[in-house]
Length: 250
Image (tube, rainbow, N blue to C red; front, side):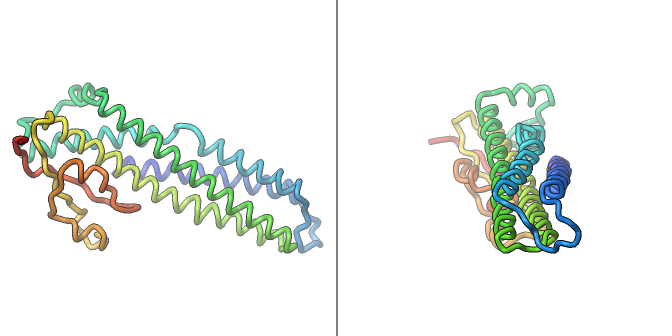
Protein backbone atom coordinates (compact mmCIF):
# COMPACT_ATOMS: atom_id res chain seq x y z
CA UNK A 1 0.00 0.00 0.00
CA UNK A 2 1.36 3.40 -0.96
CA UNK A 3 0.44 5.02 2.35
CA UNK A 4 2.43 2.45 4.29
CA UNK A 5 5.54 2.94 2.16
CA UNK A 6 5.31 6.71 2.41
CA UNK A 7 4.86 6.56 6.19
CA UNK A 8 7.83 4.22 6.56
CA UNK A 9 10.02 6.46 4.41
CA UNK A 10 9.03 9.49 6.49
CA UNK A 11 9.83 7.59 9.68
CA UNK A 12 13.29 6.73 8.37
CA UNK A 13 13.99 10.36 7.45
CA UNK A 14 12.99 11.45 10.92
CA UNK A 15 15.19 8.84 12.59
CA UNK A 16 18.16 9.92 10.46
CA UNK A 17 17.71 13.45 11.80
CA UNK A 18 17.52 12.11 15.36
CA UNK A 19 20.75 10.17 14.85
CA UNK A 20 22.53 13.14 13.30
CA UNK A 21 21.54 15.38 16.20
CA UNK A 22 22.51 12.68 18.70
CA UNK A 23 25.93 12.16 17.17
CA UNK A 24 26.59 15.91 17.06
CA UNK A 25 25.57 16.34 20.71
CA UNK A 26 27.71 13.39 21.75
CA UNK A 27 30.77 14.75 19.98
CA UNK A 28 30.27 18.17 21.53
CA UNK A 29 29.56 17.11 25.12
CA UNK A 30 31.98 14.20 25.37
CA UNK A 31 35.02 15.66 23.63
CA UNK A 32 38.04 13.56 24.50
CA UNK A 33 41.71 14.19 23.84
CA UNK A 34 42.84 11.77 21.17
CA UNK A 35 45.35 10.11 23.48
CA UNK A 36 42.62 9.08 25.93
CA UNK A 37 40.89 5.83 25.17
CA UNK A 38 38.26 5.85 27.91
CA UNK A 39 35.26 8.12 28.21
CA UNK A 40 35.44 10.51 31.15
CA UNK A 41 32.17 12.19 32.07
CA UNK A 42 30.05 13.16 35.06
CA UNK A 43 26.31 13.19 35.79
CA UNK A 44 25.89 16.70 34.39
CA UNK A 45 27.39 15.62 31.05
CA UNK A 46 25.00 12.69 30.86
CA UNK A 47 22.01 14.89 31.67
CA UNK A 48 23.07 17.40 29.03
CA UNK A 49 23.39 14.70 26.40
CA UNK A 50 20.06 13.07 27.22
CA UNK A 51 18.42 16.49 27.16
CA UNK A 52 19.72 16.99 23.61
CA UNK A 53 18.76 13.45 22.66
CA UNK A 54 15.20 13.85 23.93
CA UNK A 55 14.91 17.24 22.23
CA UNK A 56 15.83 15.63 18.91
CA UNK A 57 13.18 12.96 19.49
CA UNK A 58 10.52 15.58 20.23
CA UNK A 59 11.50 17.81 17.32
CA UNK A 60 11.36 14.97 14.81
CA UNK A 61 8.78 12.53 16.19
CA UNK A 62 6.48 14.72 18.27
CA UNK A 63 3.25 16.31 17.14
CA UNK A 64 0.47 15.08 14.88
CA UNK A 65 2.46 14.40 11.72
CA UNK A 66 1.30 10.77 11.57
CA UNK A 67 -2.24 12.00 10.85
CA UNK A 68 -1.24 12.54 7.22
CA UNK A 69 -0.89 8.77 6.88
CA UNK A 70 -3.78 7.59 9.06
CA UNK A 71 -6.31 9.75 7.23
CA UNK A 72 -5.57 8.53 3.67
CA UNK A 73 -5.39 4.92 4.90
CA UNK A 74 -8.87 5.37 6.37
CA UNK A 75 -10.15 6.99 3.18
CA UNK A 76 -8.73 4.12 1.14
CA UNK A 77 -10.47 1.65 3.45
CA UNK A 78 -13.79 3.36 2.81
CA UNK A 79 -13.20 3.24 -0.93
CA UNK A 80 -12.25 -0.44 -0.84
CA UNK A 81 -15.21 -1.16 1.42
CA UNK A 82 -17.58 0.40 -1.09
CA UNK A 83 -16.01 -1.65 -3.87
CA UNK A 84 -16.32 -4.85 -1.82
CA UNK A 85 -19.98 -4.14 -1.11
CA UNK A 86 -20.64 -3.69 -4.81
CA UNK A 87 -18.77 -6.87 -5.73
CA UNK A 88 -20.77 -8.81 -3.16
CA UNK A 89 -24.03 -7.50 -4.61
CA UNK A 90 -24.96 -5.70 -1.40
CA UNK A 91 -24.94 -2.30 -3.09
CA UNK A 92 -25.67 -1.54 -6.72
CA UNK A 93 -22.77 0.83 -7.34
CA UNK A 94 -19.44 1.95 -5.93
CA UNK A 95 -19.86 5.23 -4.09
CA UNK A 96 -18.51 8.33 -5.80
CA UNK A 97 -15.61 10.29 -4.33
CA UNK A 98 -18.03 13.03 -3.33
CA UNK A 99 -20.36 10.61 -1.57
CA UNK A 100 -17.46 8.97 0.25
CA UNK A 101 -16.17 12.37 1.36
CA UNK A 102 -19.59 13.20 2.77
CA UNK A 103 -19.84 9.89 4.60
CA UNK A 104 -16.32 10.39 5.92
CA UNK A 105 -17.71 13.30 7.98
CA UNK A 106 -20.28 11.14 9.79
CA UNK A 107 -19.81 10.88 13.58
CA UNK A 108 -19.02 7.17 13.38
CA UNK A 109 -16.20 7.75 10.91
CA UNK A 110 -14.80 10.89 12.51
CA UNK A 111 -14.75 9.19 15.92
CA UNK A 112 -12.93 6.14 14.58
CA UNK A 113 -10.42 8.25 12.70
CA UNK A 114 -9.71 10.32 15.82
CA UNK A 115 -9.11 7.20 17.89
CA UNK A 116 -6.78 5.85 15.21
CA UNK A 117 -4.81 9.11 15.09
CA UNK A 118 -4.44 9.20 18.86
CA UNK A 119 -3.41 5.55 18.99
CA UNK A 120 -0.74 6.08 16.35
CA UNK A 121 0.55 9.17 18.17
CA UNK A 122 0.79 7.26 21.45
CA UNK A 123 2.61 4.40 19.74
CA UNK A 124 5.15 6.80 18.22
CA UNK A 125 5.69 8.40 21.63
CA UNK A 126 6.17 4.95 23.12
CA UNK A 127 8.87 4.09 20.59
CA UNK A 128 10.64 7.39 21.26
CA UNK A 129 10.46 6.84 25.03
CA UNK A 130 11.84 3.29 24.75
CA UNK A 131 14.71 4.49 22.55
CA UNK A 132 15.53 7.24 25.02
CA UNK A 133 15.36 4.93 28.03
CA UNK A 134 17.62 2.32 26.51
CA UNK A 135 20.10 4.90 25.24
CA UNK A 136 20.28 6.49 28.69
CA UNK A 137 21.07 3.11 30.21
CA UNK A 138 23.82 2.47 27.69
CA UNK A 139 25.54 5.78 28.34
CA UNK A 140 25.24 5.58 32.13
CA UNK A 141 26.59 2.05 32.25
CA UNK A 142 29.33 2.95 29.77
CA UNK A 143 30.45 5.96 31.77
CA UNK A 144 30.42 3.97 35.00
CA UNK A 145 32.61 1.34 33.36
CA UNK A 146 34.85 4.03 31.78
CA UNK A 147 34.15 2.39 28.44
CA UNK A 148 35.59 3.35 25.11
CA UNK A 149 33.97 6.52 23.78
CA UNK A 150 33.21 5.03 20.35
CA UNK A 151 31.70 1.89 21.86
CA UNK A 152 29.13 3.91 23.77
CA UNK A 153 28.19 5.91 20.69
CA UNK A 154 27.88 2.68 18.72
CA UNK A 155 25.53 1.34 21.40
CA UNK A 156 23.34 4.45 21.26
CA UNK A 157 23.14 4.28 17.48
CA UNK A 158 22.25 0.62 17.82
CA UNK A 159 19.24 1.54 19.98
CA UNK A 160 18.12 4.04 17.35
CA UNK A 161 18.36 1.29 14.74
CA UNK A 162 16.94 -1.71 16.58
CA UNK A 163 14.33 0.04 18.74
CA UNK A 164 13.52 3.22 16.86
CA UNK A 165 13.70 2.29 13.21
CA UNK A 166 12.65 -1.36 13.53
CA UNK A 167 9.59 -0.67 15.66
CA UNK A 168 8.63 2.29 13.49
CA UNK A 169 8.55 0.12 10.37
CA UNK A 170 6.24 -2.32 12.11
CA UNK A 171 4.05 0.49 13.42
CA UNK A 172 3.60 2.04 9.97
CA UNK A 173 2.55 -1.32 8.53
CA UNK A 174 0.26 -2.30 11.40
CA UNK A 175 -1.51 1.03 11.88
CA UNK A 176 -2.08 1.45 8.15
CA UNK A 177 -3.82 -1.93 8.10
CA UNK A 178 -5.81 -1.05 11.22
CA UNK A 179 -7.08 2.24 9.76
CA UNK A 180 -7.96 0.57 6.47
CA UNK A 181 -9.79 -2.25 8.24
CA UNK A 182 -11.77 -0.01 10.60
CA UNK A 183 -12.96 2.08 7.67
CA UNK A 184 -14.10 -0.98 5.71
CA UNK A 185 -15.99 -2.39 8.68
CA UNK A 186 -17.79 0.91 9.18
CA UNK A 187 -18.73 0.97 5.50
CA UNK A 188 -20.24 -2.50 5.91
CA UNK A 189 -22.07 -1.42 9.05
CA UNK A 190 -23.43 1.71 7.40
CA UNK A 191 -25.00 -0.34 4.64
CA UNK A 192 -26.66 -2.59 7.20
CA UNK A 193 -28.45 0.41 8.70
CA UNK A 194 -28.61 -1.59 11.95
CA UNK A 195 -31.28 -3.80 10.45
CA UNK A 196 -29.01 -6.38 8.92
CA UNK A 197 -26.15 -8.53 10.06
CA UNK A 198 -23.24 -8.56 7.66
CA UNK A 199 -20.87 -11.47 8.01
CA UNK A 200 -17.28 -10.83 7.07
CA UNK A 201 -14.84 -13.33 5.64
CA UNK A 202 -11.24 -13.08 6.80
CA UNK A 203 -9.01 -13.10 3.74
CA UNK A 204 -5.22 -13.37 4.01
CA UNK A 205 -2.82 -12.01 1.45
CA UNK A 206 -2.75 -15.50 -0.11
CA UNK A 207 0.96 -16.01 -0.60
CA UNK A 208 3.71 -18.00 1.08
CA UNK A 209 4.27 -15.20 3.58
CA UNK A 210 0.94 -15.79 5.31
CA UNK A 211 1.83 -16.42 8.94
CA UNK A 212 0.67 -19.32 11.13
CA UNK A 213 -1.60 -16.96 13.07
CA UNK A 214 -3.51 -15.79 10.00
CA UNK A 215 -3.54 -18.87 7.77
CA UNK A 216 -6.07 -20.87 9.86
CA UNK A 217 -8.44 -17.90 9.83
CA UNK A 218 -8.87 -17.76 6.07
CA UNK A 219 -12.37 -18.65 4.95
CA UNK A 220 -13.95 -18.31 8.40
CA UNK A 221 -16.91 -15.99 8.91
CA UNK A 222 -17.30 -13.38 11.65
CA UNK A 223 -19.89 -10.81 12.60
CA UNK A 224 -18.77 -7.20 12.26
CA UNK A 225 -18.50 -6.85 16.04
CA UNK A 226 -16.28 -9.91 16.18
CA UNK A 227 -14.02 -8.94 13.29
CA UNK A 228 -13.57 -5.25 14.07
CA UNK A 229 -11.00 -5.79 16.79
CA UNK A 230 -9.31 -8.84 15.25
CA UNK A 231 -7.42 -7.12 12.42
CA UNK A 232 -4.54 -6.58 12.55
CA UNK A 233 -4.08 -9.91 14.27
CA UNK A 234 -0.43 -9.17 15.04
CA UNK A 235 2.29 -6.65 14.23
CA UNK A 236 2.67 -6.45 10.46
CA UNK A 237 -0.60 -8.29 9.75
CA UNK A 238 -1.81 -7.95 6.12
CA UNK A 239 -5.30 -9.43 6.44
CA UNK A 240 -8.46 -7.82 5.09
CA UNK A 241 -12.19 -8.51 4.94
CA UNK A 242 -14.96 -8.90 2.37
CA UNK A 243 -18.70 -9.01 3.07
CA UNK A 244 -20.18 -12.39 2.27
CA UNK A 245 -23.79 -12.34 3.50
CA UNK A 246 -26.60 -10.00 4.43
CA UNK A 247 -29.41 -11.33 6.60
CA UNK A 248 -32.44 -9.59 8.00
CA UNK A 249 -32.04 -8.98 11.67
CA UNK A 250 -34.34 -10.96 13.91
